[in-house]
Image (cartoon, rainbow, N blue to C red; front, top):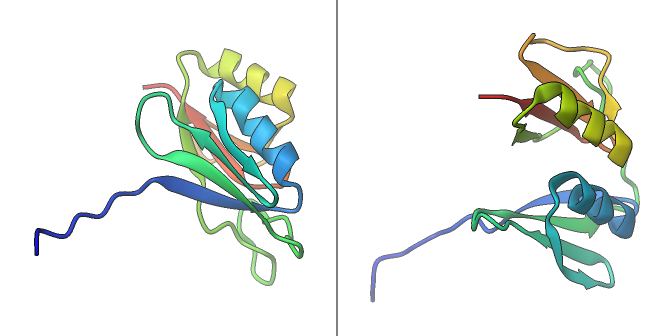
Length: 124
């Protein structure tokens, strides 16, 4: 038997509306919808890295940012590099994101997607 190989292929986000959230991220990132079946959708990463997957969560509760005791907390968030932070933020908002009230860093902008999943825009 050969050497075991493991690869991350997708980061999966739960959502009450798969079609809406996959379209949000397709618009935000300019990625192509790869799969859109009943209750499941994926976006292909054109750079060849892991893509995004979306699954239905009937009882989804928006996470709270920043985390607060007794409230739903995020379990993961996306780090999205932008060539221009201000333009990237305007684009994210035009796609349907909200700029988070709490911003812990000057060179990163935290946004919330339509289901409340936080993601960070940054410039290297």
